[in-house]
Amino acid sequence: MAATVGSSIAVQRAQPAVGCSAGRAAIAPAAPLRRPAAAVRAAQRSLVVSAAQKREMMMWEALREGLDEEMERDPTVCLMGEDVGHYGGSYKVSNGLYKKYGEMRLLDTPICENGFMGMGVGAAMTGLRPIVEGMNMGFLLLAFNQISNNCGMLHYTSGGQFKVPMVIRGPGGVGRQLGAEHSQRLESYFQSIPGVQLVACSTVANAKALLKSAIRSDNPIIFFEHVLLYNVKGEVHPGDYCQCLERAEVVREGTDVSIFCYSRMRYVVMQAVAELEKQGYNPEVVDLISLKPFDMETISKSIKKTRKAIIVEECMKTGGIGASLSAVIHESLFNELDHEVLRLSSQDVPTSYAYELEAATIVQPEKVVQAVHKVCGARGLVSA
Image (cartoon, rainbow, N blue to C red):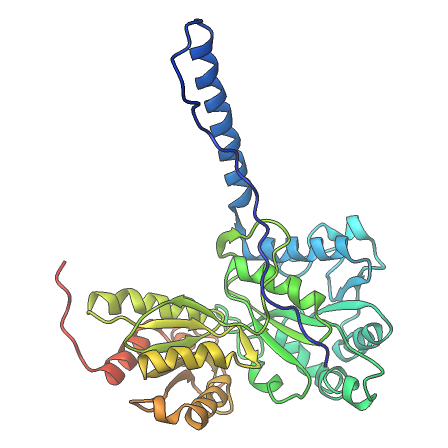
C-alpha cells in the first residue's frame, strides 16, 4: 500500500523586525518624528500578519476551507454524496463550492449509498481522488459491501495494479436526541476491514490539516467527524499545513495516568481533568486521532512514563476501538503496567431518544474522574 502523507510541515512567515539604530541623537526636528511613525507602521503590519496566521473559525468552516484548497490545488479531487452540491452539505461543509467548481466536481447523488460508494471506488481506480460524503455515517452501512470488498481490498486483489485514493467522510457519533439509527459509532464496524485507514478529527486545527492529508493520501481513508463538533471554534494553522494521519496528539502531559481518547471524548476527558487537577492529580491526555493503525510509539512512550492507562471512547464496549487498543497494550506493554487497563465506553444498548437516557448510555466526565480514583487511589483536594 502506498505510503500516506508524512510529518506535518508548517509554513512560517517572517515578521518585520522593529529596532533602533545606535549613534548620536539626530539634530533635525523631522528625524525623531519619522522613527516612531515607522515603528508604529511596522507594529501594525506585524499585528496584521499575526492576525492572518491566527484565524478563528468553526470546525465546519475549517473542513470547508481544507476541501476548497485541495479542490483548487488538484483538479482530480471531487466530492459526491446526497445534497453536497446545490444545498452545500447537511452540515454546510461544501457550502458555496458548487458555484465555484460546478456539478461535475460536486455531484449530487440519489439516496443510494451503495450506488454512489461504488461509483467513488471506480472513480478512484481510474485516476480521480473522490471524497464520498455520507449524510450520516449510519447510512454508510448500506455501502458496507463496497467499502469492505472493494475499497479496502482492490489494491491487494488487483496485485497492485489499482490504488483507491478516496476519502469517506461525514457526521457520526451520538448527537442530541437524534435517536438510535442516527447515533451510530461505526469505527468499530470498519476497524476490521483490511486496507482501510481510520482517522478521527477532534479540533478545528487538526480537522483541516488531517482532511488535507487524507485527500492527498493514496490509501482509502474513513474520516470520522463528530456531529456535535461542527460548531466548535478554534484556530487553524497558517499556510498549506498538513498533519500526519498516523500520529497521535498529546493534549496534556502528565505523570499519574495516561488517558487515551478520540473525537468528542477529548472534550469530555478535559472536563474531567479540570476537576482532577483540583484534587491533586496530574493525568496525561492523548488524542489517538489514528484509530487504525494505532500510533504505538506515542502510546508506548506515555504508558512507560505513567504506567497506568484508561481508554475513553464513545464507541460500544463490545468489539470497540477501546477493546482493540486494550488488547494491544496488554500484549505489548504488559510489563510496563502497574494496573490493568480500564475502558470507559458506551453501553451495549441502542441510543435512546430521551435526553436523560441518552446521556446515561455514554461516558460523562464524572465517570472519568471515578476511573482515575480507582487507578491512582483517592487524594485530598488541593487548597486554593
